[in-house]
Amino acid sequence: MATAFAEIAFTPGVKAAQNLYGSREKNSRFESAEDARDCLTEQEAGFIAERDSFYQATVSETGWPYVQHRGGPAGFLKVLDERTIGFADFRGNVQYLSVGNLNSNNRISLILMDYAKRQRLKIWGRARIVHEHEDPELIAQLEVPSYRARVDRGIVIHVEAYDWNCPQHITPRYSKAEVDQLIAPLLEEIRLLKSQINEDKDHD
Image 1 (cartoon, rainbow, N blue to C red):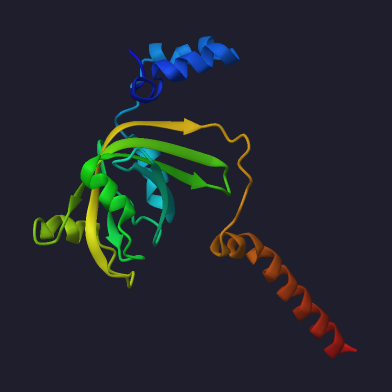
Image 2: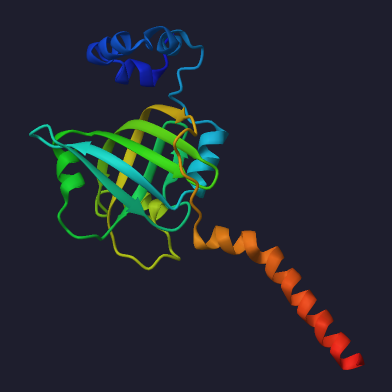
């Protein structure tokens, strides 16, 4: 059994490139794997729930790819079941490039990053656009009540395949919240030292 992503991504052109550059044998293992990697496990679900952004790629009617950054509070990309993820599409610059692309070609790819831990998850899927008047319950499920942003529509993605990338060439980066967590013990140590210094002064 081949992994689902190999079936999607290893086109004749890709295989030709692998042969040209000497990686065909290495990559052939993806075509005889036991796990198809088309159903999200707890590992993927947990990783997705912690993300506050991702990159998505769609393709226009003229064949041009378009990559867009999507952001929100951690967990705004939701796992609905092992083959389905979705998110509330918040109001942006109203160019509707991704939405327009999906109207003509429902294929979509996502890259989710954890820069601090140097992890990267790639997802291939087929998307459908859902409006509130069509399915208010689903839109309510995708909404993030604590996030003050206008929801224009929902994007629901049927997962066709996923794969994890190696950490090579991922430069570690940290959010403000992650930095605050890292330096909290140091700040507490500084506070205790200052307190001790002040106590010693009082005793002089």
